[in-house]
Length: 224
Image (cartoon, rainbow, N blue to C red):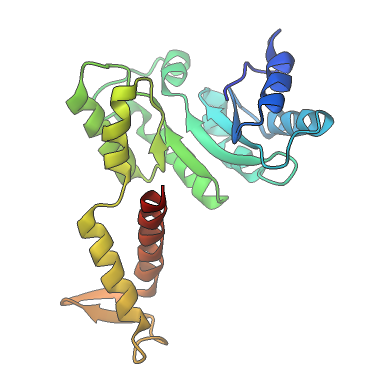
């Protein structure tokens, strides 16, 4: 549930209403510093918010890009920070960067936020795609976001759900290959090895860890 910022006239009332609704997460706009997350966490405690409610931070200001690492590092039990959400439209407005195919002007900021999220163990969602009539462009941007390491993409129309799920879900080929890698390292003769050969190529233990994640995602999707 998205609220208005606490620096607006509606922020505190929004936060109280969100706490009563008990969503999985509360999306806070224009987070630009760790102190803002601290304030949100304090108010959630005062409102006796259910402990399962997480905080998602909108990353959409120039200052947020500069402070991305410090904001992600604020993740703890008090702030409840669990995810970044890129606010690419607001970021374009405030930086005057143009949103163009491939988003070259924004790539440094997008990857900075991905790196910060990964460094501190939080998820990260890409921003919206504005042109509802451009299905091919939306699919391309989803694929690009997946390649960059995003966990998903925020959507503005039901027609975007299917293509987004397709882009961020492991393919049958990826799942099959992941299972082969896991099985190779589970062989008795390979369990203590850091590197094995599979189908004529070198596969490291880290690839097995990545494969475990792919299979876990596939199983979670199937369970739903």
